[in-house]
Amino acid sequence: MTRTSLLLDNKRRSKSFVRWLRSSATRSPGSKRTHPIPPSRHPRILSIPRRPERKRRSERSAVLIDILGEDFGGVVVCDYYSANKKFIHDNKILVQYCWAHLIRDIKFLTTLSYKAIQRWAKALLTILRKLFELWKTRYLRHPGRYQRTIEKWRKAFLQKVRKPPNHNEAWSIKDRFKGSNEKGYFLFLGREGVPPTNNGTEQAIRFVVIDRRVTQGTRSHAGMRFCERAWTVVATSARHKRSVYQFLLDAVNATYTGTTYPKLIPAKV
Image (cartoon, rainbow, N blue to C red; front, side, top):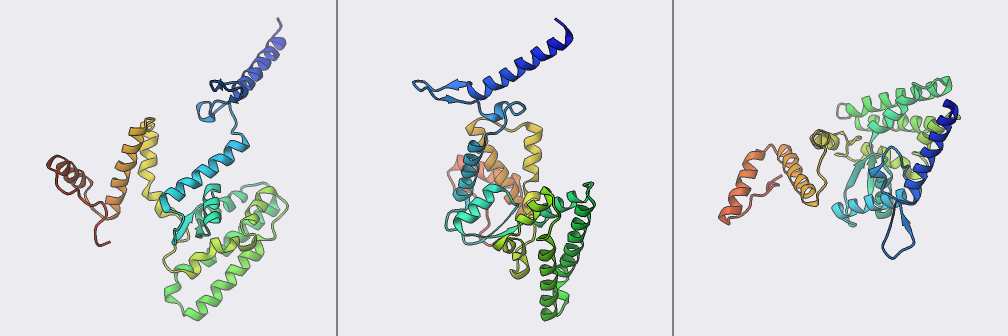
C-alpha cells in the first residue's frame, strides 16, 4: 500500500469513528432511540449540537432562578452570556451588562487588518474613554452640566455603534444595542450604586477558579456540595473581614457540643 492510499484510508477510518461516536454511543434499555455520549467526555472530538445547547441554556438560566428566585427585584450585573439574557428576559429584571467584556471585544476589532473596522473601533473607544472619565469625576461636577455632557457622549456612542462597517464582528457589536437593549448598558449612569462592570464578582470567585484548575475539582455529589459550602464560607468571610479558621472552629465546636451554630453573615452588614 502506498503512502497516499494509507493516509486516505486512515482519514476514512477517523471520519467513520467520529460518526460512530456522535450517533451510536449508547442505547437506553428497552428503547430504540440512540443517546449520544455527552460532549464533555470527548471535548476534542464531538461538537456541541444546537438542540442540546439550547437545553443547556435553559438549564443554566434555571440555576439562576433557583439562586435568585423568580421574584428577584434587584439589579443583575453580568456579561452578555446567553443564559443570563434568557433569565433577564423571562423574568423582566433590570440588568447592567458588563462594559469590560464589551470594551475587550471592541479592542479586538482594532487588531483586524481592515482599516474601516479599525477606525470604527478606535472611534468607539475614544468616546467611551471620555464618557467614563466624566462618570468617574461626577461628584466634582455641577449636576446639571454633568447630565447634559454625559447624555451627549451617550448619544454619540449610540450613533456611532449603530453605523458599523460591513463586517460580522462589527455587526455583532451593533446588535447588542438594538431597541431597548441599550438600557442594559447605560443603567449605571442613572442609578447610584450600580457598577458598570462585574469585575468585583469575578475577583471574588477568582480563588475558586484557581483552586479548580490546580486540583481539577471533584466529580462526586458530596464533593461538589462540600466545595460549594467551603468556597462560600471563604468568600463571605473575606468580604466581611472575618477569620475563616475561627468560623470553621466555631462550627465544629457547635456540632460536637450541640450549641448554636455561628452565623456566616453578621447581623449588622
